[in-house]
Image 1: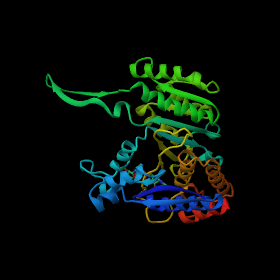
Image 2: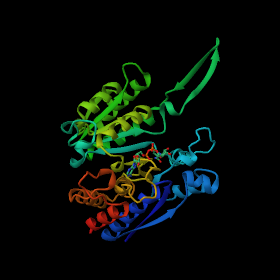
Image 3: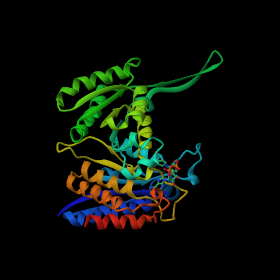
Image 4: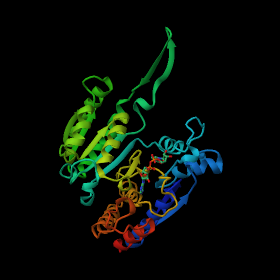
Length: 363
Ligand code: NAD
């Protein structure tokens, strides 16, 4: 029996509700395949502010650094919404990304057949969409210096800086190639190389790295064109890789292709070891959904699929990850629907009931 150590950070709102189902499913897959998961739980986000005055304590970060992976719910809510407040729930996420060196954000976007009518796009356009948006997370214009505003000749001026070092581009691009190799072997690199120096280096690095992955087809798209192609031909994409700002925008656009927030997992990865695994943080892309908190109706699938990504990318448990994904598919194929996906004729299942069904499908 192998043992893995997992930091559990449920956070606020529906976070604890969906994390409980994620843990239920992880334990079930552990029992089936002979693994034990040892969880160390801590309080972050708004709950952390209430308990300790900060969204993320130093000891919480240190605890996470010692684990094999971090399983995260969501943070925030109306109680802590004051934009001027010096401590804010999302500081937990930013602090974990920085403190754990998580530079690659992976968001798979998969369209389930039964959801094709629930997006704003035509069913024929979105049917079969199955892509990953890979976003660089720790560099670029959100962090570059100088970043400031000043007065000159009686008017306000402002500057943001988009800075990258070559190694920061190379490591994220290699993650993109490796993800593509394990999928349909197509990588779309997004930049604005016709006008931006940072994008010209980005494209040069992609071209230099590409020969190491001869089985992967590379496509270069300007970011403005990419936003259009995502809407007009989303089924053509396999893995999209982009720097921080472009990736932030494209990953939100792509998430709208899938029809529901409650279905989309994510992973944030740092440096990989030789076997391809390494510490990562796994969380649904949705927030704390204060409007449905405490009602037992939140869809736990995004959290459960984040658990599958954790098994695959941090623990190296591919068969176990695939078993969870297959169980989710089977439960949905059998017609069970959480409230956010239920049609007028469906009897929606609650959060815990969906978790139980997925556990049963695993057996
Ligand atoms: P949200 O994702 O929490 O909710 C948007 C809508 O989607 C709501 O109607 C909600 O009920 C629904 N929804 C979301 N997840 C669902 C699920 N699993 N099942 C069923 N329905 C679901 O976004 P928001 O309302 O803009 O933000 C609410 C709070 O969450 C804010 O405080 C925000 O800052 C925070 N937030 C946190 C994260 C994070 O922790 N990563 C991400 C986004 C928002």
